[in-house]
Image (cartoon, rainbow, N blue to C red; front, top):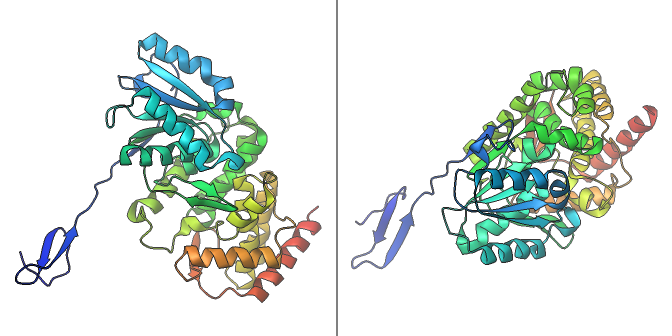
Length: 385
C-alpha cells in the first residue's frame, strides 16, 4: 500500500514505483512478578515448570542456599547445572557476562524452552539478564532475587546492564525476565547493611509517589530491618506497596521513551558518587545520599517544609543509611549532573519531591545551588550527630 500517514503498524511504502519502505511493528511484552513463599520447598513447583535448567547463583547465595537448590532439583528429578558466579560492582563487567554465556553454550541451552534461572541480588540478575538478551539475540530467563534491593527494585523491571570504565550500567539492554519470583524468606540471611541498602529504594518510592508507604516506614522501618521482614512486625504491605509502586511507574514507560521518570529520583548524582567511592558505598547508600541532598534542594525551593525535610533525614538515619559523604561536593556533583543531562538527552529532567509522596521535574538546577545544598546537607548531618 502507498500512504503518507504516520505509520502505526504494518509495512508502508512510498513512491511509484516503490522506492522507500517504513516497517512499523510492536514487540508484545508480558512478564509476571509474583510473591512465591516457600520457593525452595520441593513440594513447591514454582522454581521450574519442567525440563532442564541452567541455574546461575551468586557465590554467597550458593554457600547459604546451594544445597537446598540442588535438593529441589534432585527431589523433582529435573536435570540441571549450577553456575556459581561472584557478583558485586567491581566485577559487574562484560567479563562476567561472557562467563554466563560460556555456561549457556556448554549447557546446550534451547533457545526458547529452557529459561535460565538467576538466583542472587541485583548485580547477578543484571549480568545474567544481559547475557540472556545477547545469547542468540534473546533467551528467556527467570529472576529469583535474594536481597531486598533485588526484590523491590532490580528484580521487577526490564533493564539489564554492566559497568564500563568508571560509569555505572553504561552497557545494557531492555530484556525483562519472563517471571520474577519473590520469596521474602531469603531476607532472613541478609545482613543489616544490605537490608538498609534495599530500604533506600523503598524510601525512594515512598517519597515520590506513596505517602502511606512513608508512614509505614516511619512507624515500622527499624523493626522490619531488625527482624529481616521475618518477625511479628507486618512487612507485607511495605513490600507489596514498594513492588506495586515500581511496576505502576514502569509499565506505561517500560522502554523509557519518556525521560521524565519519577523512579529516577535518587539517581541523578548517585551513579557517579557510587562509582567514585567503590567499594565503600552500596548502591542504595549512594541513592540515599542523593535523596538527602535533593531533599535539601527541595526544601530550599519551598517544595518541602522544614518539618518534612527533617523527618525525611531522621528516617534515613534510623534506617542506618548515610545522609552525607565527602563526595557530596561541587566538583563531583557537577560531573554527575553533566553525565545525567547526557543520559536524559540534553535536559536535566530532575525529579524533586513535593511534600512527601509526590514529585515534580525541573531543568534549572545550578552549580551554585548544588554547592549551597551540599554545604547545608553536611551541616544538617553534623548537627544530628
